[in-house]
Image 1 (cartoon, one colour):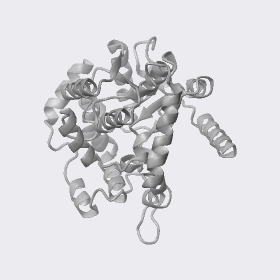
Image 2 (spheres, one colour; image 1 turned 60 degrees about the vertical axis):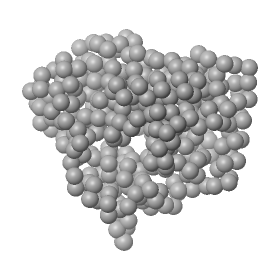
Image 3 (tube, one colour; image 1 turned 60 degrees about the horizontal axis):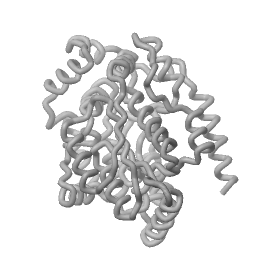
Length: 360
């Protein structure tokens, strides 16, 4: 990590706040051996009991990527009855679709796919691009939990099992991405730059989160924090047992995310997600620091046909390449340049976590 995170702080020996946070706090939240094994079984039994007389006892969001695919594999090994839910935002790579099909067929898992209204969603994505902010993925990031909770509630399921984990994703600067649950922010961007009203887009803000959590009793379970998770080993297992194929980069199962993270964010906003990923893996003992620094000297978009990806990106969004280049040259802005609910949401989360702490 470096000062591309504007909030980074280094101590006297050059260790940053992210690594200190990981080593002193987050490390204890990852796999802890026998106690994690027992806790995983305890929670799995709790999930089974919650859906004892139902067809499904949990929901798993699947993208065709490593984390969600491995979670689906583990869930079946534990004897759970998952319903796989996929958000189709129009940007799936062919390999991602193939991975989902192979995975679920071999594991015997049912799939529900929510297809977003393309014209509406395309207009929303263009709005975020025109806003010149790094939160380019907020529309997708908001729609995913919305659809997961919708399906959980529909089937009276109490648990959503997520592929999110501390072993590979513990380090992620807050300065790089604003809250994906701020509906006021999303609607403000669309109102200023969009041409369509959001009539079918699934939003997910604090009101819906409170409803699903307290009225419906739906909880997230981060299964990968309870197993000795290694991405390299997970890929080997998925390829060997499920004929799954690696797609070449973190979140490259989406062609939209592929261009955003490999080109748009590092080139326009000086945000290179490889830094946070590698930093986490170094702290977890998965990667070597010196080799990681050498990796960062290379272009984030090496190994992909950049011209081809940009052409596909523009054609899909119905914009010209010159339009895209113009957007890339626009001065970067912040979420703070637009109406948002930051102060209220931060207050709400402080109250919630204080309540949970007192309850426990």
